[in-house]
Length: 618
Image 1 (cartoon, helix red, strand yellow):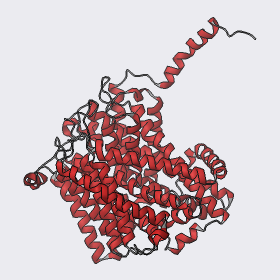
Image 2 (cartoon, rainbow, N blue to C red):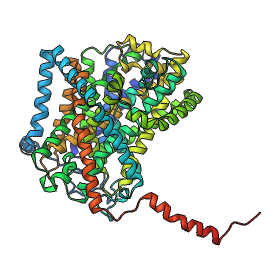
Image 3 (cartoon, rainbow, N blue to C red):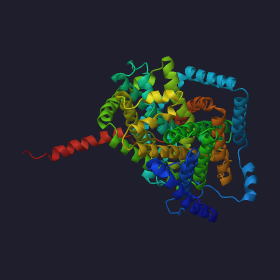
Image 4 (cartoon, helix red, strand yellow):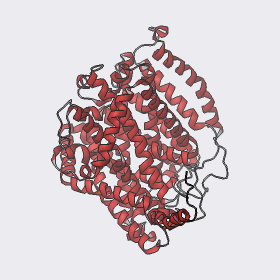
């Protein structure tokens, strides 16, 4: 996102963060790796405060570093890739006049009403939302399964079919980002902290309570394979396809047909580009904002529990009621600063750091983990995943499928609006085939490697008795948040792994939350206008406030269920988007050639070359 250079105030703040980062970092590193040096000098909740100061000061400094414009930056006229500055005197007036009234009011009123009911009638509210979510997941199970399976099939067709050759923005348009940057931004925006939250845990749950489809006894070798297969299934190509079938239509109509870069643009084939100011279009954008805030706020609440569990495990610190507020406050500061500085500064840099930490952590697991077990079991699980993919995708029976698979698909669809819109914004100048390959194949590969490494390691540790991770989870009331820490404690370099894991929790969550803040700000701003810093700060703080409310009122699972309900409409919208895009391409994009046809055309040339120049006999 092209932005102006940092203001004088931002530069001064950035310079002040350096000594703060160095001092807090020295204490944190000493506390982790040389605890005897620190002794009792720092005790109790002070560790949480120091850790948050360390991470937030470092990440905010990275975001505030000046950025020099170059010729490869996106055009300043691009609404999505531009964040305007405003002064204090104009901030309130612009905030009120430049927002879409419905998109501003609806999420605020819904979340205010939800937390009011949660505070006044917690049991009734929880039961009502859970009952609604259960009804949707059970009754809408076939819809979610069909939508995800069709999304995978459509993405596969785009990879090999003729329309994959379409260049978004026209033949002469060049990409705004190098491919490594493009992949980094797509991957880190779409996965969030679910990767670190569920990485050491999901396979263990399936091992302890095997899915009915697997038909294995709990704790058996077959249960190990089944656990890894279902983990790959829930986090692999099926999940990422939900983003692509929203992102590709938005990108095509925005960059090729002049439609606005908004989620409602998927309706362009039905409403026309000029009809995207209609009530239906605004309804789609409003639902997108609601689903995004609910999903991000819930994720922030969940990873705060994981981070605080790590602090408690390391230093025996009870966070109390202040701890969650401190954590969410520090995280909110990071993603508000990052989103306000734009894609080219904060978002891109923190995403790059995220991928570096992700790769380093994975390499350490390979170095100290059970490599032969991971390789053997991972290869077997990957083979089973490929062979059983279609039956797994179409398996509709049982409560287990509703509670795990259908729930996962609805959650991914609830994230699809903001992730799809962000992928679209990054994809100008890319071919459709590249967008699908990056957004589905490359991201799925990275995700599945991660789950094979962490899931395989946790299964090995549990099976061999080196640590009883399931017992540790049970001791904390079934909370998945604690799973990683006894796992790392049982491995060599456990302290380093735990430190990097805590860093990954924050950085992964920040890279999704800064993207969601920016996307929500764009959707809530009137068409044709770029969001100001005031808009971005408001929506970032609002997401943080929702997360704090969830933690204080204890409604994380209820809000998550409420956000999942938004996945239903977007599962339907994804089918509409794919249908409309297909009709448009069939009508207007006939001059492209599939990869299969290209390969077939080369076969006679290969045969002719063989006949003319036979190989020498020896």
